[in-house]
Image (cartoon, rainbow, N blue to C red; front, top):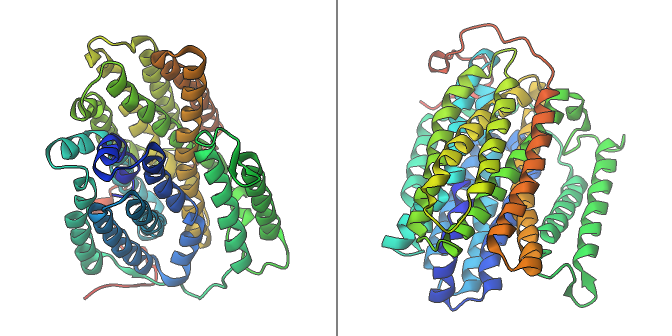
Length: 461
């Protein structure tokens, strides 16, 4: 639900403008509010899971997400919808780090790959299936149902959470880095706001004398202060222990994670706009053209996760990024106003590539982390992915606007944004090549028969 709601809104924006009497700026904020509220607190919620237990944080986030989804569907104005989307993003931020924390704590390394394969399969499927599901719901039921559809799924998730998910409790109560929280939230908030909305304000003034550039610079300065505070000997328990980045695979994994976040958002946002602008496909047909990518991503990720315990697992994301580059490169030459079925082979290659990246990248990045750093690692890792999503949306939007202004050719603008993404995918390949080889964990790699690894858990009766 949390990943689906990053993309499902895109095909509903024209309907929202009509039904709510909203401006283009209003509906842009419907997207931006969720991305900002989702991205900014992720480091904090990862640490909160360490302190109070991931089950509690997940449950609180899920309830908040469901209430906000109901409020989104019932919103009668653009302002009410934007406010509800903020709370929906906060709920998503509370849930997301806990999902990976559950898996990394419950499954020993030898049995973690298959579990992460399922996790990555769902993540990949949800990220790119938004246009298809959104097209069906908007066409047949109305835009409100892109939010109402969360309710039955969320209620079922709550029931399963309290019945089956063990209550992992920390062995100790960690101190809380209040100054780190403030600096991190201010830095990420300002930086993400500036990048996400820079093009909307034409990279000029936002309010009074304050400009987009000043907001971004302020965000960078706050983040620099945050890093200095995390390294300070006066900080007894930092929010983001910098020693976590001494782990080479974790550091490189976050670089590749940002690359996959930029790529997925950067491909599907301009592609959805192109399909509804040049060949003028309906929202439903737009979803059908992109459906092979979501299908292949979900299927491949499940099997790729099972293979990611191998010592040579880095070749999975290397191959994945290469296939994504192949699919995206082919699309740059195939875009046109003729039949769009010619894009389907590119969609298949793109989906297989994403499936080979999502779960293996997570397993490789976190497999050798110290168990005491898993909560912080989950927060950092999810923050990098979400920040990549924001950068992908902002950077491709900027390229589209610049090329459109210069040429007036929407197809040329989309092609230019794809060229940018090819460079990003090259960075992802380079990071994956640099992964250190790690010996496969001993034991049976079948998560279905995973034994209790002996963690301090309170199991439900």
